[in-house]
Image 1: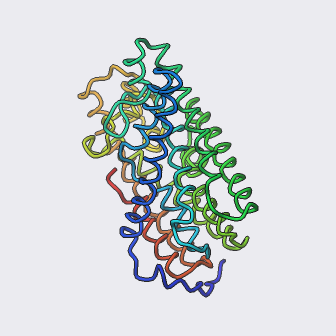
Image 2: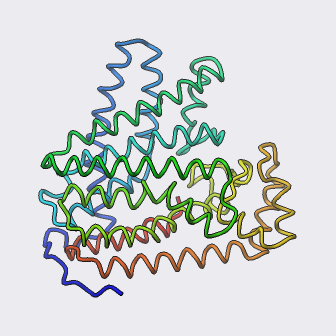
Image 3: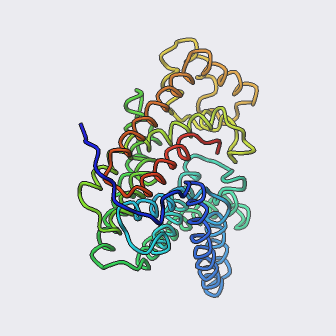
Length: 359
């Protein structure tokens, strides 16, 4: 049991809503990100036109929308742990998170065979078209992701903090990539066949770089105490899984116009996500879902039947109830954390932004 700790004073954030804070961070981040990526595009084009094509595809994905949640969490955690200078001080850590995400999305889309991302073509789909073939496009997409991974490292070197804190932040970045790749292995191989195994996979694949990683990255740059870091890590565990459960629900029941992804895409790809595993408890639903699971040629009508089965067997209700329980757990843990008052409120707002969303 954790006791309530008197919050640190932080008048700069008191009374600031999560929405207003997130907007401010996004404006700061996108200005730096777009300026930097424009420079990288120019350097690549000067090297060779096709190098420019690859870097342009990666850069365009980075700047094509995106919620910037990870960058916001880095900044909020930094300030909540007493970091000085406000969100501007760690804007480059947010940039690092954005290009790291681009690397992961590019590779993930290629592995899953996804043609769409953020309402436009995935990077491998675009490069297949622009470079004239599947093999050429796929190879270039892998390299585009690798390039984004390298940029994430470079971006973190630009943060204006003490060298010891930068080194600490690099350890957190390495841990993120370590965990997300392990989680991706489990996801690609369909190794999770029970609800608790699915959540463990989500903790590695998604929470690692969506919630836990950004929070601990911000804490490292702030020189946070071990007590603060432990409290953030405890709260990140349920929130990160909740984020992925919401993704699973949006993949099946969300509006493609808002999500930028085709309805039922996870089913066509054969993903054993939380809904599919939960539905596997019901023999009728399991049989109906099996007709489309992993079949990329499944028609929309067939997908609709499978999605209806997810509702009829109670899988949707079960996952939604689990999601709400996880969000409440995250709220409770954040309320007990030894953070600045304003920072704690911003992070409390992040719980709903991550777990109660339509995109």
